[in-house]
Image 1 (tube, rainbow, N blue to C red):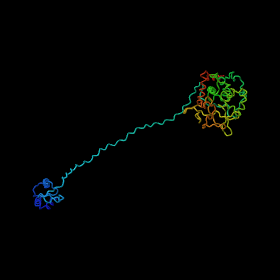
Image 2: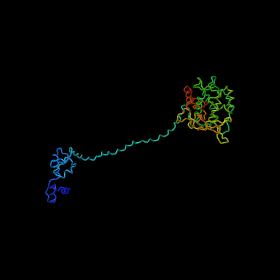
Image 3: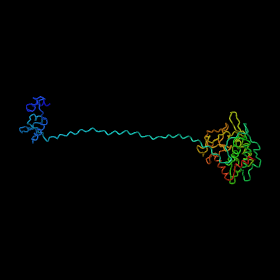
Length: 394
């Protein structure tokens, strides 16, 4: 570029000629020509004064020259721009590249809280029946029927008449627990149970007194002693209303009338023996049937051991508590025979009822209801265990 410029301005710049006439090796070291030119221009510009255009060496200011390129071909000329020379904008230092913020280390995932896997709660087994609080009363259940398979059971005349004065109430109407125990053993257990089968004899007898305590009617004079025959009337000490129905009633009701409207102790004992130890016979359909005087009845024979085995629990029974279906040989709910259907799947209130104490809304569940009634008598002086031992020894 320097040689090209020298050729162009050879007539005006003698300095350039020397550059053309010397070789690179012969040329002496020289000053930087661009610096000298810039120095001269700055010095000349200081003489512009009020000139706005091209100031010639002659001192004349030509304002019609509009550009520095038209003014500068003549070295004596000075370019005088109009207005102050713009201050060159300093070149800003290069912006250093932004240093990205350090990448934080990745946040570790939260440590999972260890989960304790609980072992499945085992199904709580039902609470077994509470042992009887009544002294002398052991585990209940069915005896083996003494009569064996038979087509029918019938009343004998001596039982119906019950003529012995020992079975009569006193003048106040009191039947003592001693009378009740002896009548049950004589007309019930001895007639229907095979000796030595089922619950022991003491449990059979005490169980009968516990049931009588819950079924036989009381007066203010009877607690701790027995029950009132006049208040109990035709239901008897064991509340055997079924004996007054059907063909059985045809036999029993006349005797009740003859006894002044009272079901005597002998009939009651016999009825209790049938319900708790009835013999089976197999009818033409091959089903077990228990009949009295030609009528089929649902009895305790073959009934489950627990009330819980039925689908109709007592109103106040507690969930997951087992309730015995027996007090001695006396059951709460009976067995289904073909002629007297009773399904353990029934949800009807008081389904399959035999001795129904506990199946009513105002009573505790079976057998607790009977235990409570018996305990009332024991608290007032009765002793069922001693009474039964005396009756058994008689």
